Image (cartoon, rainbow, N blue to C red):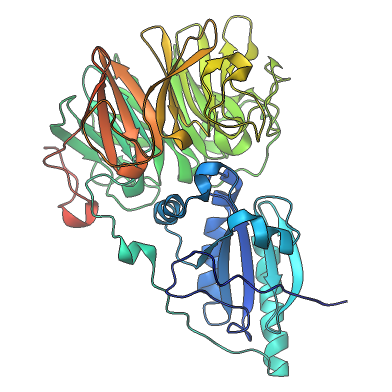
Length: 502
């Protein structure tokens, strides 16, 4: 029995188009509906596959993103627009308010792809990652079949992209993480695919990377990254380690020699979520490393894509899973019993690792001495999020992406609540320090953040990567005064000369 695809709503918000689209007007095209939510690492993983298919079948395939939000913050149209800009999404996106389209198509998981033939009938539904080849084959078959029956027609949508309405010409674009050291302030300028180094006052020292997405080792002016995130610095050896997230690699930056090298990862995403036994770093595929933390001769990695913590031995460059079964969940216990859910930040007090476990909106702890995993605060539930201060399991966070151990406290970037919070690691007591709601970059104690994602403390200052505000904020912890960092000699890559030492 053939099932006709339910029509798309015309009274909901749409992005990347001037007017809502209907299946009727797209008759004659193969259509793929991508049900996604922008917090979901699996949804982000399939974006390159979708772009590949769009380009390959540009005359006969129309792709429409159906954004069905998991978190409350993801229901806001402006926040979805920022995600469209951040991930360079060029196809139309429908904001599925209230899960109406999700329910009409009987979707049960993120991501889910619905394939509709040129006559408007649903022909397949696929959930999860890794389906590019199967979809490629199906689309080719549908195009050939409907070409023969005369039911195929080429169409050009001529979309009005959000990035055309709102070009990213700011000096920083969606900075994901920040790292303050005695020698430099390092900024992961994620949207510009580069690392920026300045003094703690904002005087530019150097830019690492061309500003174009790619995977290339070499000098600071030659190297390329793809949406780099977390960093860790070895002051003795003057080495900066970087989680090069969308390249699925770990990069090592020799500050003295001004050279970038890949030390782990193949450049391809691993599809294996089972614990990985020890192997050579450069021969082992990784899965969206989001943050790194050096402890002695080990570099611990928050491997968001496989929901695990990994360990890279810096002397031998051997790498293996350290903790986490690979299941997306919050499970305490031994390293092999434990489970995480998209860990996105990692910090240490020297005896413990602390992890911002974003999809369960919780802060986790790994004791490096007894090798046990516990939950410091948060519900530990995939849907147990909110905005509640308190102690331990009664605390509610919303997709926290940043954690920093500083001044014997844990500082939390409670990303989707747009707040900075403080947690006592001994008691699990959580208290909001700053932030009220999404807003601008005003300099005051009541200043507003927009999806802050990274934190780093030094002296009496806490630096914040205020991601959707394209800014680095500096909090004086004695007074809670907030200032926005200025980088006078920094500009967007398209507006400046090739990277060089200032």
